[in-house]
Image: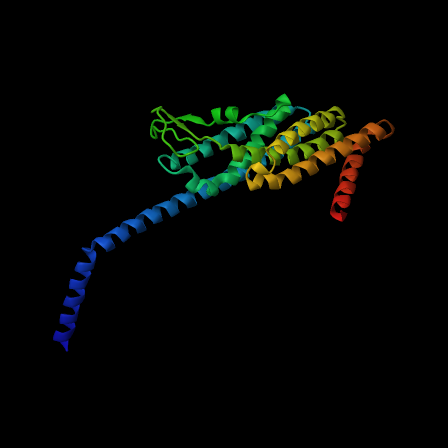
Length: 277
């Protein structure tokens, strides 16, 4: 019995040695290692994307305080620091994507990048009353990094400059972030009215019209996500237009401290009529 067990162990050991020497098994083991590495990288990118989303949302909430704080420069200074911190987090994305296919991992962090675009364009609008373009956003995402002397574009290709590391936001992520910006502008409009600022809503109306015209020009020819957000964009524009109409017609007869209530109630009436149609 004991001799039989020893013989069986020898046979199993021989089979294992043969299997380990098999080129097929060796190939599959290399595939296993490669897939595990890609999965781990994807999970790291998801975490970075989640952190970027959270910090971008906090920055947007902070920027809404501009309308109520007496010294808005302090709010803008704090927001700038937060955005600088977010750009450092995006630097981690760039490092992870060196020599990698950008679009293979794009889904892991796209929502975080869209939220960052929303935050940085919101900050720019508050200061300059204009829309920050994609090239200017991407200029802020170039880093000096001696340990990772590579430069990655939106297709994942390595660039020629050996000293720079960069992350380039795609046009689609930029457009989706701008589409989300319109909702924040609508809320910014309500806050401005509540603070007695009657001029900002009318400035926002013109600005939102220009954005809507740009998205309408793309129409159904663009990605599905853009077409889907076009409806929400139109709703934000219509709410602001209707509220501005109410301010124009009844603003002179309504005390300033009640204008925000008038604005909000008008938006609620619009929402109810939209749900009934």
